[in-house]
Image: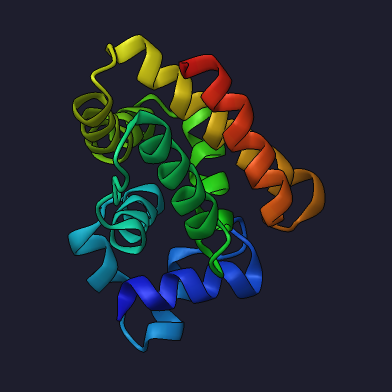
Length: 166
């Protein structure tokens, strides 16, 4: 219930205005209840994102299909109400917060990076580049338009990324 309420509050108010106090009030619980489990808003948001994303479905018979399905899945997830806002907000906070950056890297990025490395047989630096290009592009679009990327543009992103990995 806390995760759904958190994403709903972020969707309604925006990341910056979705304080722990407002999230707790919307969930009908005390803010101390949230702080007992999550020491910061950033830690709460990372767990919300992990719950919203779940494991990446690495579908397809070959590398191109796996990459394409991962990109389309990511674009779809970031387009869900509150998810893109939460991701962009916590990512932005991480720029100036080394502890949050570590949480983002170890808890959010690493599981997906490792799954992609194994599925694609690519070294870490190439998979990190794939993640940077895809997430960076999708978040940039949301930041500039307030909307997730449309399907035609996701298709173009897939083609651009696939040309690098061929």
